[in-house]
Amino acid sequence: MIKPLVAGNWKMHGNTETARHLAAQLVAQWSDRPVAERSVEMVLFPPSVHLSLVKGAVAGSGIAVGAQNLSQHGSGAYTGEISGDMLVDQGCDYVLVGHSERRDLFGESSATVAEKFKAAQSSGLIPILCVGETLRQRQQEQTVAVVTAQIKAVIDCVGMHNVCRAVVAYEPVWAIGTGETASPEQAQQVHRAIRNQLGEVGLSTRLLYGGSVKASNAAELFGQPDINGGLVGGASLEAIEFFNIVKRAE
Ligand code: PEP
Image (cartoon, rainbow, N blue to C red; front, side, top):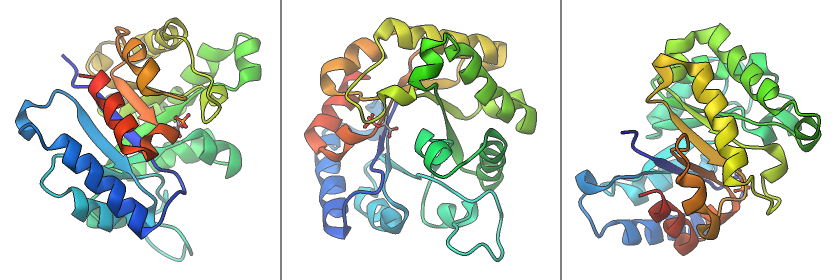
């Protein structure tokens, strides 16, 4: 049995006050049961400048914290970058790698994504590897080819075993922040292809779906056999809505 994970990607939103408030609201909702009895893991991905504040706000609640990005380099003259070790030092357990906004807006190639994945694991972080096709690629029936190639680039760099001990998030680019969601069948089809690609070693790897997940569509998506939770953007900025999504994964 794979323990589902629901992750909230706050992207570049908020300030100290809103970050503290959102984290406190989630802790209040989540604290009705002992950590050991929870059947879902919740992870928050605030902006890097709010990591230690959010880590402090969720301390003792069982809610984990992760970063939205990291450098592929360990240390050195890389102005503006943040290393995996620095994120661990701030209390992170997870880090997003290869989010489509990083690939598209910041030109991260699959090779760079693979290096970042490797750097994350070297620091002891659990990478959530994001993959997904554009609308054009879907229309040209290239979805599975695109997604499996994005994963293969990381397998070629770190090996199958290391990919399988991470988390993979399938996020169709056309569904991110658009209000458009893949149907549960469309999502399951791609998740099954990923599961097949990972083979025996990947039978217990957590595969998340991301792309306009809301409380109203989460249960059907999370009910698919190869979907083990979700990566949530917009809806994670609203405590009640996000908490209801988390509950749908139980
Ligand atoms: C995301 O940022 O990973 C995401 C899935 O965003 P949204 O839920 O807003 O589509």
